Length: 168
View 1 (spheres, rainbow, N blue to C red):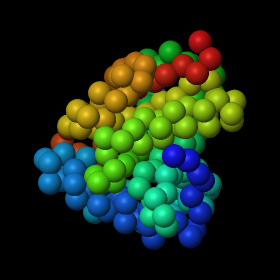
View 2 (cartoon, helix red, strand yellow):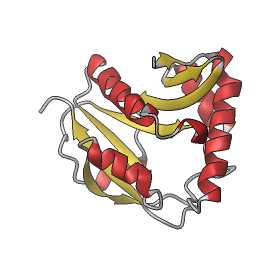
View 3 (cartoon, rainbow, N blue to C red):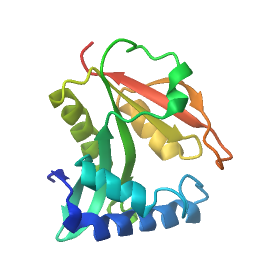
């Protein structure tokens, strides 16, 4: 299962992936994403910047992740271990509901870590919705350490922030 950089040709399929994952989350009571986020502007910008990566099945994107250095302003007050390095951030990791349980999420996460190392980053940061225990568990199992919680506008539950050092 190859993870590739997604292009403008993948945009329609990528938007469909996020729409279907959002619907699945909502059906399961996880109010992590909605029609406001992630939206076509955010996703289109990820592709345009070259920071969106994914797994394709035929011409369909069935898993995706964004790896970049863009951090939420809410991260500023958290007690990060890596205070002087060059952290990468993971955003919008998603696997199509029909493809879940096949190791695609784990593969995307491993790819994101390797991509960050290749770019010279010293750690990875991310935030994950507290109401999504599957995602929280995946990051903990992968060796990420919780450093605190933040809140976003129009979200009822906080997001846990995690960090993993890439060059301990």
